[in-house]
Length: 151
Image (cartoon, rainbow, N blue to C red; front, side):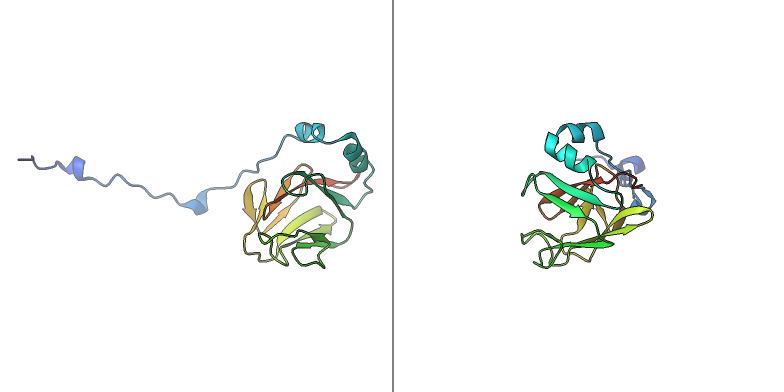
């Protein structure tokens, strides 16, 4: 016959973690490593970007090597063929995200996409971009570079 449990043995050993109290830590990629992975042509193109412009370079995944210039006040990203950055895959919403430009720099804004927009592996709705950030949309991974004089 089994002996009765002591109060300590019956205690609930679960705990609650309140996720709202955790803060996100930006996973900044090593910029020297990123630049060393670029071809000399890509480094020259990025160095020549004018102020108030930026570029996505696909360093991994589908369309590796593709470059997308960002030079307007807003740039649409999506599966819609009218998007400035057209990503042709079902993992991408027709109107997936926008890149907006302001005096403070460039910002990625999710447009209510089904699969979400990720910045350095973290889901985001709106987030300012810095050189070396990786924007993950569907199966596409776009690395951000900005022109001289941008903040």
